[in-house]
Image (tube, rainbow, N blue to C red; front, side, top):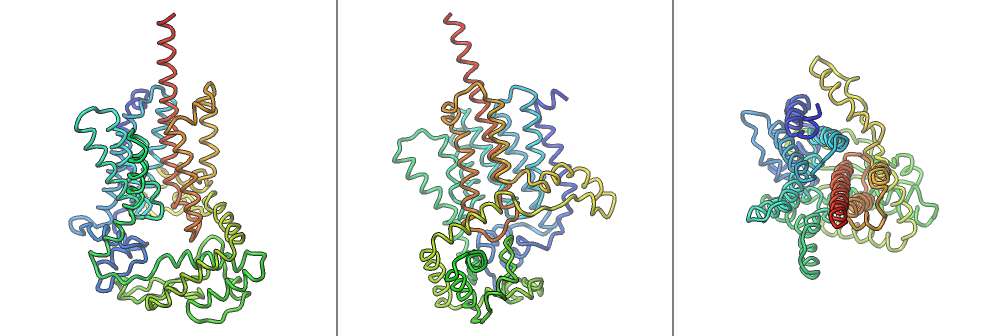
Length: 458
C-alpha cells in the first residue's frame, strides 16, 4: 500500500479503467454536447454552445464504438496522463501528500468521466498542465516541445469557455522573460481561446443565435425581481418583454423567476432542423415566458444588447448587488446531484454507485464549491506551512496563483451567470488543490535544503 502511494501511476491507470467502464457505455445522445454535435452535422447548424464545441465534438468518430465512448476515452486518457506527469513533477515525499494526491486524482477522474463541456475542458487543461510541469524539470529541446504543447492543450481547453480566457495565462508562471514580453504573451494567451472559437465559424455555415442572451435574461430577470429600486424593476421587466414584444407584468415575470437558473423565465426558440434532429430543445421549457429566437434580426440583436449594457451602466449599484448574490450561489455550488447508488437499476449500476459514493458525497455536500475550497485550502496551508511566514507563502508563485485562479474563476462565472450548476466551477477547485500541493512541497523542500546548507556551514 505504501509503495502504491509513493508511486501511484499504476493506481491512477487502474482507477482510470474502472471509471471509464462504470461511467457509461458511450451511447449518449442527451445534453449539450450531443446537441452541439448533431447541430453541427445537420443542415442548419446554430451556435448555442459556441462554434468550437460543435466543431470539436463533430470530429469524434461514431464507428466501432459510439462517439460518446470515444470522447470518454479521450477525456479519461488525457486526465490520467496529465495527473501522472503532475505527480512526477510535484516531488511528493511523504505518505500523507501521496494519499491526498491519489484522492484528488480519484475526484478529478470521476468528474472527467462525465460527458460535458466542462469535463472536456478539465481533461485537456490538466494534460496541458502536466506537460508544462514536466518541461520545468528538463534542460533540452524537449523542454520547449513539452511547454508549447502544454500551451496548445490549455488554449484548446479554454476555447470551450473563452470568456474565462484568463485561465490560459497559466504558463506565464513558469517563464522568466522581461516584463514587456510577458505582458504581450499574456494578452496573446487570453485572446487565443476567443480567436479559436471565432475561427471555428469558418468551418461551417453557422446561424448565430447569440448564446450571450442567456446572461442577458439572467441579469434582467434578477434585477427585475431582486432589486429594491422600483425604477430598476420596471425597466428590467420592460426589457424582458422586448425579446418577443410581450406585455407581461412584474408579478407575472417574478412568479416564474428562479435564482438558480435563467430557464425559469427564458428558453430557446429554435427550429428542429437547427438541432439536427426532430427533438425541440425547448420542449421541457414550454411555460417559460421569454424566448430567444433564432429568427432575431441583426437590428433586434443590437437593440437588445445595447439596452442591456445601458441598463447596467444606469444601475451599477443594483447590478453589483445582483452579481454578489450570483457569486454566493456559485460559491456554494447551489445544485446537488445525489447518490447514484440509490438510483441503480442493475448490478453494474450498483457497483458504479459504490465506486462513486465518495465523489457523489463531495458533490452533494458542496465540498468542491469555490468557497469551501478556499476554506479548506487556507486550512491546509495553515497546517502544512505553519512554520513559514505569510510573506514567504504568498511569494510562492503556485500558491499565490492558486488563490487568484479560484477567485477570478468565481468572479468571471458570476458575471456570466446563467445558473449555479456546480460543474461550472469544480475544475477551478482541482487546479487550486494541485497548485497548493505543488507550492507547499516546494517551500518545504527549499526550507530543508536551506537547513542542510546552514548545518554544513556550522
